[in-house]
Structures are given as structure tokens and as C-alpha cells.
Length: 390
Picture 1 (tube, rainbow, N blue to C red):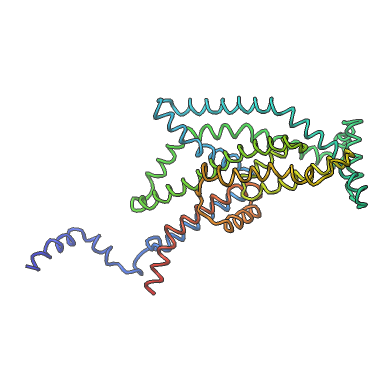
Picture 2 (spheres, helix red, strand yellow):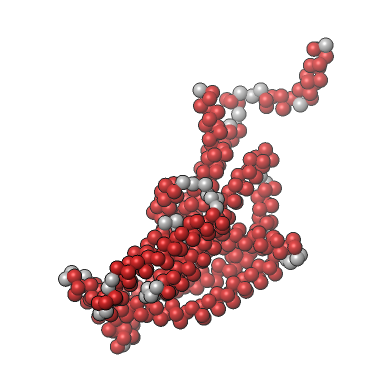
């Protein structure tokens, strides 16, 4: 009876000799790419090589990366419009670009004069701040004379600062080349970014489908789980942090304007923008106190030099916004999408800043979250299995 039961299996093996041979091949008979650990190491090395090449060519790939990130973040909205209202992606993308352009123009027209006024006031008063500190505390700050001379020249004859550019010297040619190069780079960035975004947003789902179609079938379940977890972490971080940064910037600016901190809009916008990078917004607190102190000292108002005026009132808006952000905005908008401890976040942020500057500060946390997910899903189970077997 047992011989009869084993007969179909023997026939199946003889019917498919290649499968039978493949199942009984030893490790020495297999190709390198058929060995799972080596294949995984090759994938990791390939991804690391691509990331390193992108880092070396970061000046070229920066607008591409930003456009691809924006397309990824806006893809749910475009997909919803396509499914709900049957709007083609090119139309939705164009409308979205127009709306963002109009809103950006309105914001610049509305807040531009305020920003320029505060920037000019800060530039004009900076030499006075330095001179007041020098006189009050008897310290010597080397940049005081240079700042005073530069501001006097700008006020009396603005073109005198630009005269070295037109003297025909080699140094002037170098400066002109740097100015033209920087201007061209900014112009190309502004022009290319919407173009890149348009095409990436238009073909985003198609690119995903193409990659998914050529992905190995045996890897699709694991890959789909990884993609879902990474998408939750990355999209939750970026969408959440951007919204929290905007709301925090508005609250910082309003609070410091109410408490009489000078340059309240510049300080509030900068502090809110720094909210994207964890712990970086803490610099806004001492800056608010310092600017309030310098403004009171420079104005000669001795009665305003009190603890309440200098320290307490500039601190109230910062601490209040920190409370709202930590206990209301972050749990409500972002929650714990990255699932990393405070110490890990701090180390990751410092590493990202050291490796890639400002861009590294912004993308360090989502990249670290993705690496953690890959480690938890792929590396850690195999490590545990290896430890159990040995």
C-alpha cells in the first residue's frame, strides 16, 4: 500500500527531472546568485552604491529628489481625484501647480514687505547691537568696525560695494563668475523643479506598476509588507512634520508679536521651519531672549531691562507652543510613525547633518526608520534563526 502511495510522487519526480535535480543540488553546485545570503548582500551593496552615487552627484539630483518626494507626498490626492472625479493626472497636477503658485505669490506679496522691513531693520541695527554690548561690558568684538563701515557705505553709496566687480581684476572676474553661477543654479532649480514634479506626479503609479511587475514573485509578499510599513513611516513623518512646522511657525510669530519681541515674524518663521528637524527649534528660545535684550539695551530704556521683560515674556510663547506641539499637534497629526526613541532620533539627526548638511537633517529620520524596518523584517529573523541553530 505504501509502495502504491509513493508511486505518484515518483512519477512526478520523473516527469520533472529538472525540478528534482534542482531540489537535490548541493551548495557547491549552485551559482552565487542562487545563494540567499550572497544575493541579499548584493542587493544591499547595490542600494548602498546607488545612494553613494546620488550623494556624490547631490547637486544634480537635488531637484530630482525633491520633485520625486513631492510627487510621492501628493500621490494620494492625485489618486483620489482620479478615482472620485475621473480627472486625468496631468490636469490635476497642473491645477495643483497653479494653486501652489498663486498661493505662493499671495504669500510673497502679503508678507514680502514685512520680511524685507524686518531684514533691513536687523541689518541696520546689528552694528548698534554690537557697539552697545561692547560699551556695556567692556569687551572687544572684532566685527564691530567692519559692520559699521559696511552699513555706512551701503547707506551713503550702495553702488560702492559693487565697485570691485567692475574693476576688471582677476578677483572680480571670479566673484562675477560665482554670482552668475549661483544665479543660474537658482534659476534652473526654480524652472526644473515644477517640470520634474509634473512628470513624476503624472507617471508615479505607472512607475510603481512597472517596478512591481518586474519584481520576483516569491519576494512580493515580503516586499509589500515592507513598502506598507515604510510608506506609513515616511509619509507620516513628512506630511505630519510639515503641517506641524507651519502651525508652530504661525503660533511662534503671533506669540512673539504679542509679547513685543523684535523681528517676531522672521524669528517665528525660522523657529517653525526648524520644527521639521527634532530639537532644532530650541534655538528660537535663546534667540528671542537675546533679541529682546539687545533691543532694550540699544534703545537706552533702562526701565525695560527687567526679568519679566527680557526673560519671562519672550519665554512664554515658546514654552506654550512647545506644550501644544508635544501634547496636541504631534499626537494628533503625526503620532509615533517612526517608532524610534528620543536618543536614537538625536543621534540620527546629528549623523544626517554631518553627512549631508541641511538635507541630511531633514531626511535622516525617515531613512533611519526605513533601515529599522528592513532590519526588523529581513535581518533580525534570520539572525535569530542562525543563533538558534548554532
